[in-house]
Structure formats: structure tokens, C-alpha cells
Image (cartoon, rainbow, N blue to C red):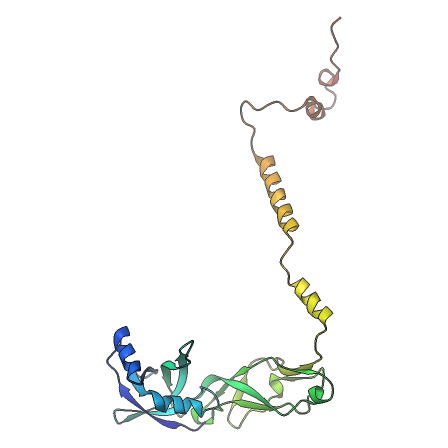
Length: 253
């Protein structure tokens, strides 16, 4: 990845109101972090930053950040956008060394039309949109490009199948699927999947609750003044061989 020159200026305004004025003036607040230096608050020219992002394949950008006649080699770590307008609100930079490897997430892009889609009626499924790679800052790719032209129905491209650029190591489980071609699901299959993922029926919930209440009632001790249990229950509870308890009651003449 080739570094791009980007001008930045020291920033003393950190309050919400001051930052709002900064954005109104066409500037973007930023911060650079690094292992060797303390975090430094910066401001960027909004137009320059937006042009830089617009002409990049992703927001993985390596910059030579020129601050007060000093340069910092840094990676764009995070870009915060306004949820409605999409304008850049804040940028975090991570200072790196040109001689130390770094690990970042890079997007995966497919090229070509899969054979299974073109002639087999299949659907291309992009399972993994970003992968983790490790390399020196100058060797980092902006994206990993995968040619899917030969991919047939029922076939997949796994992480271990990807060819990494020179000096780049692809990290992760090599068996993980990145891109595949599958036949479209039928209405019956979609309905079955929906039924499997449905919430438990109300009757099941009531049954669980009822059992819980029964267990609680059976464990509760008897209270004084409670009515005696039916005679039938007492007869069953009487010990075997107790003739007096078992004999029927005679009526007086």
C-alpha cells in the first residue's frame, strides 16, 4: 500500500461547541495514536480528506501525515460518518513503523461471473466480506480480489484458497467459506427455516409455569387451622396392619 501525503494541523479545541465551529469552518477533527507517542489532537481540511477517501478502494489508507513540519506514517483506523448526510465527523489515525508488521481487516471483492450463476441458475453468495491480514505497512493491500469465473453450483472458495499478495499473510481458519454458489431456495425451504426459528408456542410456556406452581404448592408446609384431608386420603396413609384404623365405623342402633 503506497502512502499518501495528507496535511494536518495541531488542534487545541476539544469541547463540543468548539468542535462544532471547526466542522462549520470546513475542518474535520482527528486524533493520532501510537505506541511511542501520546495521543495528539489534529484538524484536517475536509475537502482534502473527502477526496482522499473517495479515490480509495476502502478506508484502509496509509498516510504520511504532515503536522507542523513533522511527518507521521499512519493508518486510518476509524472514520466516523454522519448517519444521515454521510459527511466525515472524525478520524482516528494509528501511527505505525515502516519496519514493523501490522494486522488489519481488508475487504474482499469478487470479479467475473461465476459459471454456476451464468449457466447453472445458481446464486453467488458472498459469505465473508472482510478478512484479516498481516504485513508491513508498505505491503498492505487495500482489498483482496477474488476471481469467481470458474465457480460452479455447490462449490465454494475458502480462506485457504485465496492467493495473498507478496509479503502479505492471510490470517484465520483456512476452511472458512468466503464465496460460494448455491441454488436459490424454494418457498418450502424458506417456510421450513422460518418455522424452525419460530418462538415456542404459548401452550408450552403455560405448561412450564403450571409445573412450577405445582412443585411450589407441594413443598409448602401445612398451616394451623387448615381443614383436615379427606378420610379416603387418611385411609391410604394409615400403616399396614393397623386394624383399628382400617376397620369400618359401626352405626349405633
